[in-house]
Image (cartoon, rainbow, N blue to C red; front, side, top):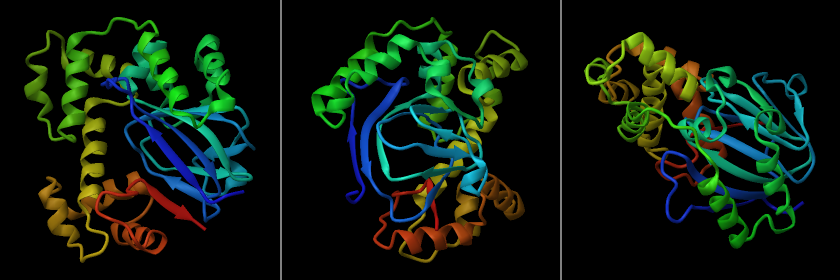
Length: 280
């Protein structure tokens, strides 16, 4: 199989808060498996090749195998991904609130899980994607996917829910939640419960994940990193707390994570490949 090829396709006009991107990927990664850190998104993959194993176990044989397609719910810890014989997939990257609005899935039930796409997505939607398998890498085909999402019926969600999710995402978790709650005509408990159903995690948890991802994007992979100073600049005032949060997100201590990034991606630029930690 050829070297790994990844082709992204951006919706035009944008499908803000719903779909960030579709993509086509084919080839062989230069290591056995990926350890994928939480991204804050809901990846949906339609498989055109051999099965893939995905799950929370570092040992690939302990994770379930997916032959046709899968949905990654909102992840708060790393997911291990192992192609059994190369990769050949179509991908759609949904915002969690958009996925919830489109398909009326309780996102809390998908937290830290990977499930067969056909179990939770409408058969008509899955079939519409499958009908374009032969033109999987074609730009026109991906515009068709974007229009499919754009025209799919959506359930009505409260304005405050869209607004709170957008602010947390756009401000990379730098949000004082108690100040936001005062402008919403619901109790904090009601806000948290409704948000969790739509996103998969609480507002507080979403803030923490986006804040850590923003921190990783700020790391210069080619230069020295002062983790204490960097953590403080992202409002982690306690180093032990930062190390705990970082390890929960990545499964690694900060120095281990950086060493693996540098070792596997020697030509990295700032902001690249922050959610991949290769497993040999």
